[in-house]
Structures are given as C-alpha cells and as structure tokens.
Image (cartoon, rainbow, N blue to C red; front, top):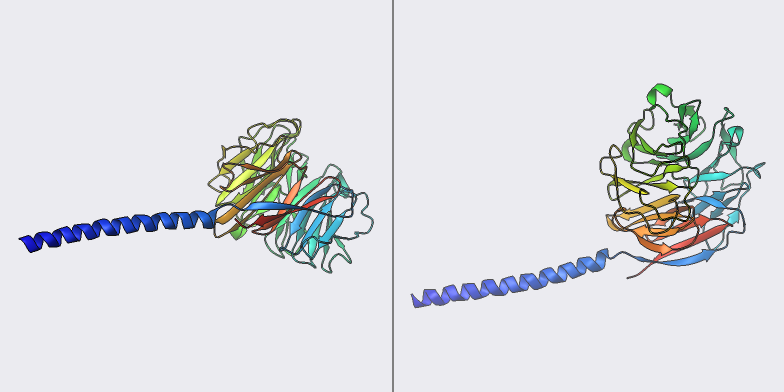
Length: 368
C-alpha cells in the first residue's frame, strides 16, 4: 500500500509540475505570437513629385516601382522607391484628368481619364511611357468614366456613370486593345442619377476566380455591384451608407476575407459622420455598418496588403486624413492628418499616398 501511495503522490506531483510548465510555455507562446502579430507603425517620407497638379491615383507594382496620375495630364513613375519621380508625357493630354492608373510593371501601364464624353479615355504604354496608344474613347456626350481594374494582363473591367438610365460597364479580354460594353440585360437596373466617384481609382476592384465589385452612389443611391464571371454579368446589393446627391459608396476593397465598402457625403467635408464604412462577409450580398475613421469628410480611397493574415493593413483616406485598420475595417487608428485621395501598397511594409499640389508621401513600416 505504502509504495503504491508514494507512487501515486509522485505521479500527482509530476502532473502538477507538467501543468505548471505547460502554463508557462503557453504564456511564452502567447507573448511570442503577440510580438509576431503586433501591427506595424509607419514612418512618413515626403517625396518630390515635380508637379503642382492634384494627383488622384497611384498603382504600386513593388516596393521600388510605382506609377501615379492626376489632373493636367499628369503621369509619373518611379523605379527606385520614390527617391526620384519621372514625369511622362501623353501627347495632347494637358486638359485631361487621369484619375486612375493601373500598372503591370515598370514598362506596362494603363491610364483612365475622367471627363464628359470624349474626354473619358483609356491609354496604354508598354515601353515605360515613351509612347502611348489610345485604346478607348467614350462616344456618348453624357458618358463619364470613373475607374478600372484588371485581373491580369488581358482581362479588365471599367466603370462609368449611367448613360440614358443604363449602367455603364466595359470589359476587355485582350489587355485593353478592345473594350466592349456589358449588355443592359446583364446588368441591374440603374437607379436615378446613379454613378460613381472618380476620386481615387478605387470604385472598381477585382478578386480571385473572376470576382469583381463596383462601388456606386449619387442621386440617393448607395450600392455595390458584384460579378463572379469576369464581369460578364452583374448583380446589385444596397448598402447602409449615407445617401444623397453627392453621397454613397466611393471605394471597395477586400481585407481579411471580408469585403469593405467605404464612402460618405461630399457635402459634409468637415464632419466625421457615421455610415461611411460597411463590411460584407458574403462577397457583397449583404452589408452591415462598422466603425468609421475619426477623420472628417468622406473616404475617397482605400488600399490593403496582407501576408498570410499577418500584419494585415487596411488604409482609408480622404481630404480629412489617413486611418489604418488591422482587423479588416472593424476599428480604426489615425495615421496622418494630411489631405490624400488615393493609396497603393508596394509591399506589406510600404505604401504610397497621393493628393493635391502634387503630394506624394511614402509610408514605411518600422520594426516593432
């Protein structure tokens, strides 16, 4: 009996010891995970663009290569992380507003100009901006292109304001050499005065396996259009965003397996209103409001970059400032009070933001 009791006591003591060690190890692992997943802090570097024009779009290819565009036919490119920005020339474009740019490499990029009728155009270069080919021009006088995005070098989609009460969506399957308008019977019915916001180049986003989303607003509308077949057919869902003549959804982005739609009211530039950010967990079918950034005014643009769900960073920005979310848009932290319109990540640790007066700022994550 006694030897058995001592053995039992020994086993009990060992169990307590193992439990204590396991608890210590668990705490250590938790601490380790906290160190690994701690959100990065970003260091701001103001860069020289060489222009005083308002820049409204930026497309980063890598931590070294990025393209930016804006008013007055402005097109810029960097291949050294923004230490130098080179101005590029699109012939006869001084009166065009290049409100979106999509870059594939240091050599290949497309530009979208927004404007009434024929001033809405799409250009492409494959020689680093030395020459440009005009690929598309809107024929309808009331047409107005807003933004575009691409799944790959060949397949892309563009969105413009409704024309004659019909949504205006374009598709290309050959890198933009030809663009075809999506048939009215493959689109939802347009709302009264429904259109987009050509503010940041973010009103169209594409995703994996042919998915795509379009942010709409104006005329009392606030919707997200969605496609699952490379833009051939589209469906619409209302969002709970603020509505008005110049309000609605301005940009949409995918972050942490959620779809995030951001916008606001251009008529309230000094007010930090609610109903500016909504999240969908079913690829855009249904939406719910979440917290909005603290900066005032509408959210013009957004950008995200993820790496194995670690250090996920979602940027929201507008004339009122820049905010960052590390939980897919559920909560926000102020990052900068500057006036910015668009942003793009070149890597998980670097993004650029652009805005008025030729403003280009690079944000680099600092080690924790």
